[in-house]
Length: 293
Length: 297
Picture 1 (cartoon, helix red, strand yellow):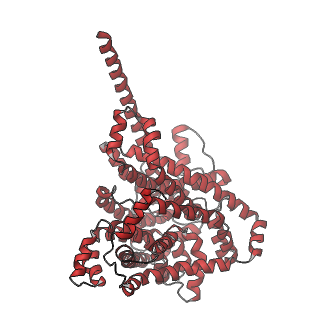
Picture 2: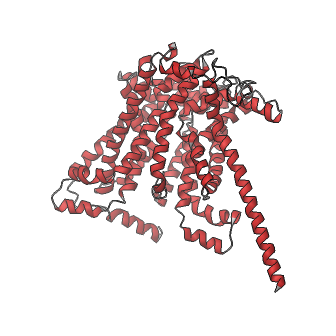
């Protein structure tokens, strides 16, 4: 009897030690992950806050005289690399919003037809969408740009929007189709009996019920086009037509540039998508298990 | 075909259809025209044009003669092999870590997702400046904390390529962690509880329960990630920039370099097309896998 109790105690002690060990290990892992995630961001901030734009680490964890001068310069377009900053910011925004609207519209129309109506060879269409979803975008860049040049569409925001919509729509269709299965098809049937046309069904029933999924898909398209670089770089050649991503690249091309301005520009450029991502995650987190990303 | 699949297929075909009569062909076409136009004009046409541009066999002979191409091929293989597998395996393990219900782990997840939200160009530029020279942040930290003199990262091909791969993993691991996290959340709690009662914990639970249940998702993710990583451009372009002496180029950066710096777009397209022998089987495998698994992405 006493031996059994002793064994139980030993077991409990072993379990407690084990639990403690797991706790310590996960704390260490957490610390490593924290440094891993933040180090490059911290580096950006350090360089942006340095008054001289030194990229060399001065040895202080926080700069002794942090200067917001670089952010002010970007904001007021006070350097010749940055003279069109707000215009370029607007271009990025126009491309992002247009991609968002077009992707949501085209994707929801296609997903409605594929999921709710009888389409012969629906599988084939979905496979075509999947194919263009997984295709590495860099591999298509050269022919795409050549075609845009041939039709006089190079250096136009529309050519960039076309590329972004092409890359964003397949994923939108797949997500919307998945989500649409949660909307009972009986609704369609009832409306159908009342004499609604497919267009009315789409506008009055499908779109309102799909609003959350449309928000997710639209945000995805906006993030994708805001962060995309290669097509914007290859298609847009005039400085006033550039996007922020391309404006960042000109610093990269030069040997001697005020790196603090570059990093301030990088931070300002990165803030909207980061904020948007967190906004979306907060909204999407409870649904995460239902709607796989 | 298993009965399960058959049942699934029947469900796929018969339910969910409000318009069984087939009298709506006109509507169907109208709804599908916008996407059809986008696909044909902006995907199919450039694909066909690219294949046409890279049709001459002499281009491939020229590529084989170019030592830069051989190096880029090796770099791409290394990039894919390490970049995909390391990233996904660590993401899978970390998704288990992030399943733990602790307030500080939830808070950490928010920070951990930051690289995913950050646009690629600023992130990679920061990596470049963190690694460059003797006084970059990383070497300065190594010196201050450990007293080690860090290497000049971009003077050595292996180190430069490793930097690109690490930056790429940094940027994309959070995304895949979220994918696996969602996959883990979809595992019914009863299974985990049963494993608990049977005394399977830690490694054994991972090997015998979690991993088999996630295997399908893991394979699909590996295939997708392989396809995407084959065409990776930004991390190489902005972290090492091909340094030292353009020895860390991968197929995508080399192709764009041929097109823009040497005004040889055909050669650039050919360099990228040479990835097709890997790309096409991967895409076919992916479509098959998705078709049978009915897995949604």
